[in-house]
Image 1 (cartoon, rainbow, N blue to C red):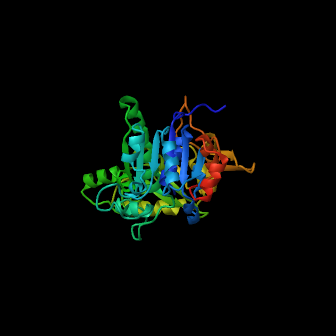
Image 2 (cartoon, one colour; image 1 turned 180 degrees about the vertical axis):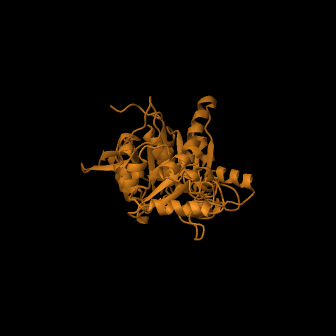
Image 3 (tube, rainbow, N blue to C red; image 1 turned 90 degrees about the vertical axis):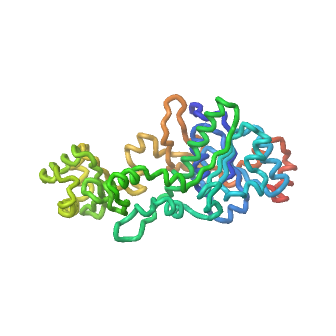
Length: 382
């Protein structure tokens, strides 16, 4: 039997879509919150329903531009703890579901807005996506090779970390504060703000050296051989993260170049050491290097593909790769819960539901009859 999660008894109404907000509410749902995700049917036409992050949730369709739809929302709000939205600034005001309106109905509500650039400032009304927030925050300028354009990461860092994770942190902080004050509050999450918050090391080294950080030319970004990536004989790659000299020294000993141990950050010999490391790692396959480096104190790792990650024994034992039963009875792999709590652990309890699949059940819970539900459907309210 699954233990109650840390957020059991908490109800979240999620008006967001795409990735940042739904990722946030997935975190809350994984830890026991009841999450009711609400979307308008017209969004389905975009083909951007990322269903994998709707596990542990209920999903209903609702048109907040209708009087009846708004009435349903406010009935749900009466027993809710959190409202999450990811519209552009001003949209919820026009819909009449903004924080000031909502708090009149439920003053204990924790209301979180996720936007690209925040609720104020000169960029508040700009549209954007992950790559734009990385750009404005100065993060994208530090990703990629030094002599090539900035590289767009293959994952959505700003959406997930800058938006989803920061929103989850903000909501948890606000819920904790509410336990002491009895009052809810408003949370303004900017994905660009979140990415600026990723720059402490870059700022530290810039202030330390007096130089502007440059792409692929930092202490922790390809400048030195001790913190780099290398191609192997079979066209694969491995990473070396031997920042501390004791780890670097061990690697130099294994590769039979002990003299390089004292030259870890020597700028004069840097090109020579990099050339040696590149040539050396190309002499053996990734599996051969695994056999050699194994469990040595070097700070190294295989650069793995997604399919390899899903089969990795560490991640399976850590339950970061788990199997769930789909509605059709088939098993499929999904990602686990990264925050491990001993007393109130998070869990993947239910597979993602289909778009709007929970609508009728939620309306019945609110007291709507089958006839009323049918009428709402015919009027385009749900």
